[in-house]
Structures are given as structure tokens and as C-alpha cells.
Amino acid sequence: MKLQRQFLHFLWIGGIGFVVDGGILTLLSVAWEVNVYAARGCSFFLATLATWWLNRTYAFSTTVARTAGDRTNEYVRHIIVQVGGGLINFGVFSWCLYAEPSWRTMPLLPFAVGSFFGLLWNFSGAKLWTFRVDRHGYPTNHF
Image 1 (spheres, one colour):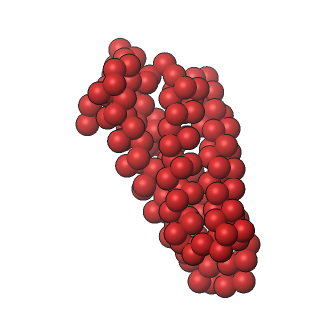
Image 2 (cartoon, helix red, strand yellow):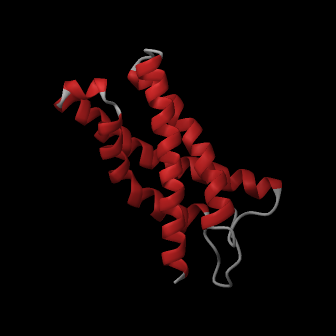
Image 3 (cartoon, rainbow, N blue to C red):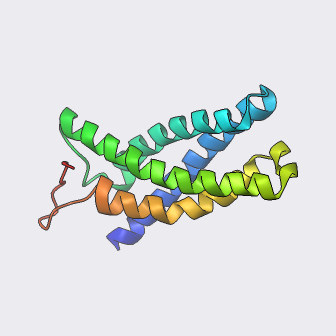
């Protein structure tokens, strides 16, 4: 039951991250005509920060780091996991733009396809590494 709750919270938080990421991507690339790849990098960074905070507050609240140093390690692990998911997402995003150039005017479409493929990687990484616990249920906040 705990795994289901965590996954549902993770999906909900991922939806918020999607809105943050997609909103910033659209604002920068469509409204302000920033290069779509530069806009994607900026939107990814800001969404990652938001999802780390939300995941540690809601989805994995019982397993989060308590000290400032441990929170730093936890955030670094989160960034590493998210970069892996982001590379998957970005690779699919780029492939979609290559395969269908007309999607450049609708960047949310390739973004959504890429997000789908990054989802399982990100949850697995969050569960098994970023917010992992020892056999007693206590956070293990070291690399």
C-alpha cells in the first residue's frame, strides 16, 4: 500500500512538474522565441527543483534527509536521477522533433512523449536511491 501511495503522489507531483516544465518551455520557446533546446534546459532545471521539494515533502516524506548536509546529498542524488530521466526525455523529445519537424511549433507534444518514457526511470531512481531507506526504515543519506 505504501508503494502505491508513493507512486500516486509521485504521479501527482510529476504532473505539477510537467506543468512547470511545459509552461516554462512554452513561454520561452513560443512566446519569447528562445531556442527550443535552450528553453528546454531552463525549464528542466526549474521543474527538477520543484519536484525534489514536492517529492521530499509528500511522496517520500517519511524517508527524507533531516540534516542540511544529508539534504544536500539527497538533492544531488535527485538531480543525478532526474538527469538520467531527462536524458531519456530529451532524447525522445529530440527524436520526435527530428521525425516530425512540424512539432517545433507545438513543443508540448514531443515533451509529453519524452516525459512518458522518463517516468519509470525517475520513480525507480527516487524510490531506490534518492529517498532510500535501510532495513530498519531509516533514511540512508550517503552516496
